[in-house]
Length: 315
DNA sequence: AGACCCCTGCTG
DNA sequence: CAGCAGGGGTCT
Image (tube, rainbow, N blue to C red; front, side):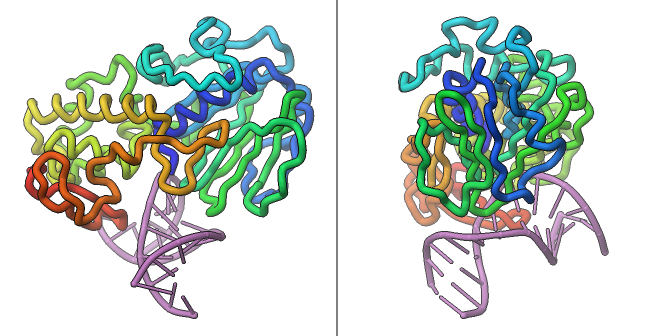
């Protein structure tokens, strides 16, 4: 279930393999996962940028190599980690703080491949050689140095090829602020929660209000903050909002440093699982002792989704 | 705000 | 083998 930390990890792991490379061919095995322009329009384009907005990955493609934007082009050394370099980079700006906040963001390419991984989507760069065909591989993008494989068992994700100029008013990219952006202050979070009667967890999960939070990190952040997930959002006190703001940022940054959470499906851009599962306090741990107080973790349904929390720590 | 849908692998 | 799981969109 790729949420913000997983998509960010995929983005970072793919940069050294894709940036500056030319798309030589696109093979679409499952046409229903594709939206927008014809995949053939990508062929011959340079990859000029990889950006993330919430859980969405944006791969910029340009006719010429010179129009590489922002990312690696202006941050030499920060992103140009050579293939195979496994060093975690948790100190390069806080994982996403440098990303655009949305309006007037970095210039995208002539075309943008917009990727949403749904629940089980994977984007993995494979070295040359034909790996065993898998019925869950829906598309493959060939480069000189290997191929990018798009896989998705449940097919909740999609690939969408769009003109770079059209991203600004894309309905699915009308997202709330990035929680790791420097501008995500306690004041901003308070504004998001104020006056809302909906459960605070439902507000955190609403991508239009805040981008990138999914079921796992909503539960983990609320546990860290000691806030019950069903509390009406507008009822949180100022101190609680501040604590929740810090908890959100901490859990996301720690998860990025651990390269994401793998239960079963998630893999990074090199096919490796993330390591954050062992650090989860409540998510997926019904009946286990709360790490803070020992009370068994409870599970409850909220909007059809499982919600895990400590009935004692979270008021 | 809740029901339903997409889809497939795993669980009971 | 029926039913559950779940991000997110749509519909009621």
